[in-house]
Image (tube, rainbow, N blue to C red):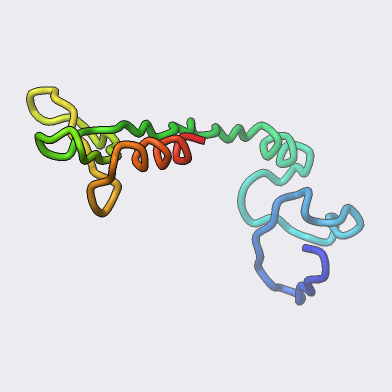
Length: 108
């Protein structure tokens, strides 16, 4: 609330800790707790859970039947039978050495 001007009769939303103590006795809460200490206690009891970050897993897969060309793939889910579904990340097939170098860079 620092630097904001509130006009007489204006309705606004704010947490108790955002309002300077010198002005708290001039305000009338219209919803929630009227006791500033209880409001402050409720606001401090809010717990925000962090989401777990899952690092993607990349693998090499042969492109077609020949041993010359390779793709970098990642698992995107499973089909109805429980087999993994893979998404190819490279635009075109790569030689094995190039694919391995790219895979190492992606896993850092």
